[in-house]
Image (tube, rainbow, N blue to C red):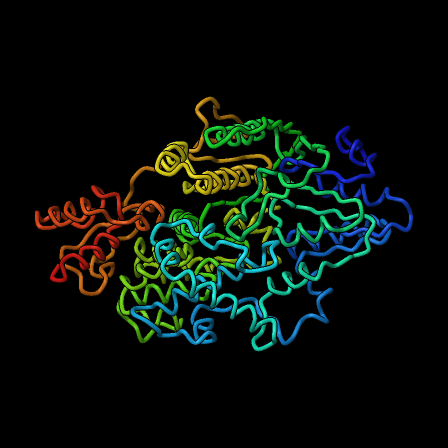
Amino acid sequence: MHLTSEQAAILSTNHDLRIDAVAGSGKTTTLLEYARTRPAGSRILYLAFNRTVREEARRRFSEAGPAAVDVETAHSLAYRHTRHLRQGDVRPGYKVHELAELLGIAGTGEGHLGFVLANHVDRFAQYFCNSAVAKVTSLNYLDIVTEDTAREFVTRYYTQIEHLTRSFLAMMDRGQTPMIHDFYLKKFQLSAPQLGYHYILFDEAQDASPAMLDVVLRQPCVRLIVGDVHQQIYGWRHAVNSMQRVPFPVMRLSSSFRFPQAIADLAVRTLDRKHILAPVDPVVIRGMGKPKSVKTRATIARTNTGLLKKAIDHITANRGRGTVYFEGNINSYTYADEGASLYDVLNLHNGQHDRIRDKLLATMGSMEDLEDYVEQTDDKQLGMLMDLVETYGNDLHERIATLKRMHVEDDKRQTADMVFSTVHRCKGLEYDEVRLAEDFMTDEALSKQLADDGSPAQRSRLNEELNLLYVAVTRARLLLHIPESLMPGDLTASAHVIVQPGKEKTNSRPAVEKSKFRPAATNGKGYAKQPFTSRAASSNKNWTKDEDALLLRLYHAGKTLHEIATVLERKPTTVQMRLRKLDPDA
């Protein structure tokens, strides 16, 4: 096969190496050729990011026929090597109410204290299992808690959270309760395994956990750490950017065979925005892709909420005709990680407690209780479900049912008129034509959030936000539709980059009686729905005395909740909940 000079240079090496590979640069092909050209008898491990990538890599390595290549994910490798260390069963995870019951804290304290504690224990346990340290006490859990209300809660109960986390880990270690997948990965790392390979090819290393990176770096063999420093999008899962942590010589793959130069230029300009956060090395991407026709179309969003809104817009515009496909199963977009569904939140919103199936939400007396829980835990997925309910109310049943009716099976994915996906679920995939949702980080939002908080943690979070946009942009092979708000000012539209004008306000959504949107015990004033805004910006910031005073003045002056929310830059529901706390008769 024909190799670029960069690929040929990598194949000629036989020492530890860090390979910075831009999106679509053929890194898997490069690693396959690297393995194929190693000396006979070499034992080689290829570490894939997830199961889907692993199965595709196994097929490709098998067809190419290099000697003795084991293809594994971090977890499949750890599972195979910890048979003698595991006691009892393994399960994907614990719901909050299950963990609270297991630890004996369900229903303890005022409000939902036990459940909030259990939520933080779950996150602390995952943080430890993915870290490289040997003891829980070597970590500061507050390092990963960002929202003010959640930080205040954790600070107040830190000793108890740490103690409960250690108890939970000990119970899994003794086999008293099934262990989670990340726990046997941790046991694997702490056992200091010697794997016996001559070469380890660590793909997508920018999203590696510190635990797995520690295992790889301890192996006495040639190690290739491969990835794209700008595609790290799993910091919220405690991934670290290994591309910046290994002291290996650096080689690059800078030619993308996926898309033409116009899309490459947009990708580079997207990364140039990082200069506002910290000095970054300039990125060069040569767009060498030459696709000629559109066979696959996709809409990509930053969040589940943003994606479902685009999907609803799509079926409204097409009057329910055509076919759709959701990467990762449509049902996964209507559930939070811990199991609460969109419908449970809607039932709580409507005061229909007898129809709530999730045990955690069943303990909530109102949407105000759920709002408090979300703020104290910083549970972003539950927050996004609340956003959808607040926006569409009882329309959701019909809209989701229509989407499910139009959805094709997995084996017909390529035939769908439109594929819908968040960035995280389409990582590693590509489509001929891509439309981006409006929920990515704009320059205006970037500057504002940085001005509000310039801490290292905030800069790291904002850096990952730009990575998400970069990954979304680079999924396109031929055509990219980008909202005007995301288009760099010094670039112009082209045959391959199509700029979508600012969204016009419409009344495309059928009118719904206000009573269907109004939570129980409203003040009777009613309100209009405002467009989607980030919960971090609109509901998780603390209320000041001045804001409380202004809220009461506006309310007693007869202003609607929507008008008050606009002035205070809050959600109508958040305003209403705060109003109840300040004035129970409101």
